[in-house]
Length: 384
Image 1 (cartoon, rainbow, N blue to C red):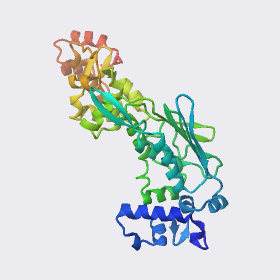
Image 2: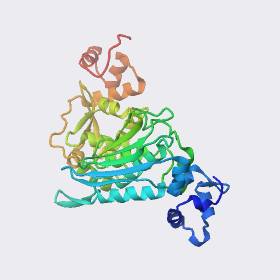
Image 3: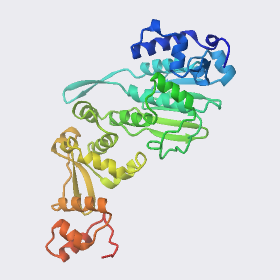
Image 4: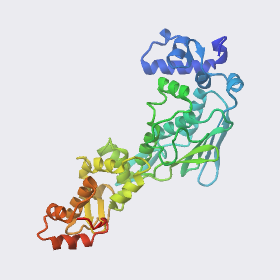
């Protein structure tokens, strides 16, 4: 777009964005010109305003003229059905991001929860998870389509919907680990330069991490008709997990958080079940599980136990306390042999009776055969 550059822009949005950029970068605002700022965040290229720059800081008339009408909606309905917010608008991205976050803060007020004679102040939803989710919707929406980005908060869940379909091979099953694909590359580049989003591909991970640390389920992504929907649970908090991962293990991985959530109030979960659940997040879930169970700080809270049915991640005595376990897992007398065999098969895929006899230190082949005959987590191929 050529002509008078500033006539295309919302001057107040430009001034606010430039000040925010300068403060975060430690730049003297007096030394930062409008043109220098726009070029540095890729809103212009050689002084010419890009479509991404127009979306980000443009005035509404120019956006509608060149790019169409891209609306936004935020609604908040309480659990008893009272509509508290129902706002629809059309503006540049800078103003729209501000506006949606102001609404989010109104419906995400801090609450005080009592746990073990202590008080904790928590918000129903994690602010960072919401930031990542709304920016993800903005970056990946299809701007060639009519429609709006909508945020619908219903008290027990928050749903963000954006126009468009999954892009570049990404789908509901692989969104967590697929290489990022940007329909709007110039917009993604601008938002990364401005530091509203970090490096590509981290949004889904952060949304999941910041949901699990509250002890909630994974967010879910769904393609429906011509839109993408992300649903984030907001109804409850497993406070023991939140405190554990905020005070004791502050650098939990996604897999570690997931394991804690599965163990909460239960005390055990089969590795096969964990692997199945994590397939949507990782191409090789066992590798991630192995990292978690072998991490020294995690060994204080979890351990492997086995029986004829399978091998389980279970809580230790300390884990029983932190994860509210009233009935700990009852291990078999030969639990260690089950764990040793399971880990060997995970690594080597197969083993004959002689290898297993040596591995498990059985005295006779008949004892080995009797042991293997009772197992329900291995398959006898009949090969020697």
